[in-house]
Length: 177
Image 1 (tube, rainbow, N blue to C red):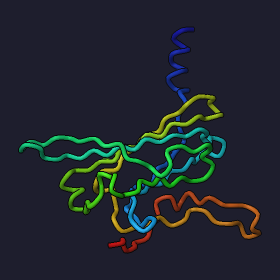
Image 2 (image 1 turned 180 degrees about the vertical axis):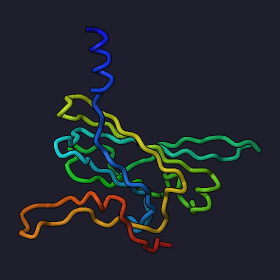
Image 3 (image 1 turned 180 degrees about the horizontal axis):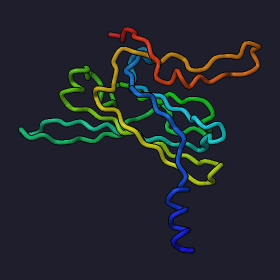
Image 4 (image 1 turned 90 degrees about the vertical axis):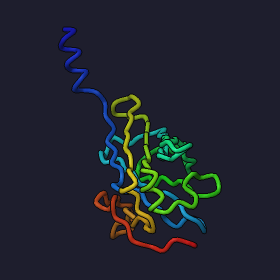
């Protein structure tokens, strides 16, 4: 019975049904710029409640002639949402408090920048907290782009339709000077 329980628990472990955008974008935002990425719950009944997100930046910089990894917690526009029933565009404003201020795509490459993401939330179907993680390497950060909306109104204007196939779609834009 113990062996059966252990085997079952290994394969029945709750998992989050979250998709993250393939790229993070540096986009125009409130007169400046921001680092953004999107996520969405892709199982109809597995919407997360009480969702929290943590985003960290890792830079490989040179100090005293030696390479050193520096870790930064990125301040977000919103770190918590009560319910993830549509998509969520996570936004880190690039301002005077941001370690990304004045960074160019070349600077990101030189520093071998990586953005690590951890999302936790309560899944009512499993009745437990689930965790989903991803990362964006500097080659997956697109500067001068913005996401295309991934939802639309139904033809009779009674329902909002979430189009999962648009999770990764973006367009090129000019960044403010």
